[in-house]
Each structure stands twice: as C-alpha cells, then as structure tokens.
Length: 331
Image: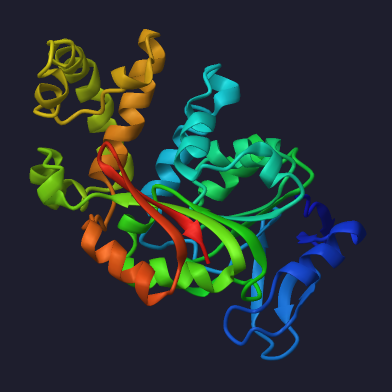
C-alpha cells in the first residue's frame, strides 16, 4: 500500500503504485481521473486532495468521527488477532459473512470503516486485493499495523463520497459502522453503488434499542459531547472498578448475561478473554466506543428488510447476533 517517495516535503507515489492508484481512485466530486504527484489532483475539475503520511485523504482532518480516530490510535493493536493470539476477529468476520478464505483469494474487497484494521488483517491474509476506508485518522493506525501487506490500499474518505468507480468491487464488508453515521439508510444504500452485480456483501448494524436495552443509553446524551481525551481518561478510571462487578454478575447461572448489562461497562467474557490485562484493555476500548460516538442509530429488522427489497438484493439473510443484525447476500 506504499505511497512513500518524498518530493519537496510532500508524498509521491512510486512508479509501480502510481498506475494502481490511478486505476482505482477517481475524484469523489466529479468522478474524473486523479493524477498523482505531491498530492492527488483531478484532471477534470482540478480539485486537489492531500496525501497524508502516505494515505490519500478526501475529508477534512476534523470530522464527526474524531472520537473513533482517537480510540483506534490509542488501541492500535488491541483487537488484532496477531496481537491477542486469539482468532476473535477472524471468527467474527467468517461467521458473520459466511465467506471462506478460498473465495476471497485474488478478489477485490471494499472494507468500509476499518478502524485500526482488525478485519483488514484477516481480509489481507486471504490474499484478497483489499481497499480499506475510514473517515477518521484510524487509517494511520491501520497503516502502522497492516501496511506491510502488498495488496492493501488505504484511503481516508466518507462513505457518502468514496473515490472509486461504481460497481468495481467483488466483495463488500462493513461491520461496526453504519449505526454511527448521520443517515443510516443513505449509508446502507450508498455502499452498494460500489459493489459489482453478483458481488457479495456483509454489513452489520445495532439492533433497534427496543430489542437491546442498555444503560449506556442513559449516559450517551452527556458523554457524546465530552472531548475524546477527557472521556477516555474517565473510562480508564471507571473500568477497573466496574469490570470486576460485571464479570461476577455475568457468571450467575441463566441470568448472567442480562445482569451484566446493568453495569455500563463492556464485558468480553463471552469471547473467552481470560487474561486480566487483555480483558481490561478490551473493556476500556469498547466502553469508550459505546459512549463517545456522535451518532448511534440502531435499526429494526423490518426496516432492513425494506431497504434490501428496494435495492433488489438477492439471497438476503438477516440474522441476529447478540445486539447486532448481520445482513448478507448478493447484489
């Protein structure tokens, strides 16, 4: 994914990668071709886009996903299977999507909302050509961890204005993302512009709040307005006190899962995370992830069914995975 050669204090694209980028990227404003130099410039409308530490950036540095950028740069390694030694991310991706590594090998995959790259790593290990997008500065955490994969392309951009030709990807993967965007229906439907006919997709979204009540919803009207660094410090102090109580409640036979939800702290007992420090780190990360997003809009099954019908998607499956709906099928 290298964009490495420095020119006049900027970043240029090495010869081998230049052709790749020019064939993959287009101007999100007018869809014209982009010319790579110290920046990316549209040949049609002359709009320029910076290359930020080797990653093309099509959005302002400051945007509504600032908190996500903060959390993933704090927890760059936490959820990577290569760091944890557990196949948690791999199992989640493969179980949710129903895909196999053999199906992905050599295919083009668009991953939207990559975070620090926990799923990027899994996708790259299959031998797929992965284009991974995030609107936040989390792309730099992803680059630090996964930049060694030669078939990975990273871009900082908004789902609403992606710099790719339409219908250019074989697979679409978007997990942990759309409920945190300003307009969930628009986000969901926009994604499919970039999947080719016959392409396969896997998207998840929080289940509607009436089906998944949680006390964090009482805190979010306040916490989502707290600056990320300050909120993170508060979460770091709270987790060591609340997590042991949540773990004890979750161990209660039959009712443990429901009782644990009374404590507004992420508990990963169900994932088999037993190491104390690992459990604390995951809990800090996900508790912050609960409380910090500007937007959180869970969806109903009926609404998701309507969207898939309006898009004429095929072989659609909508499954409940704990507090999520996982939608997969074929365009």
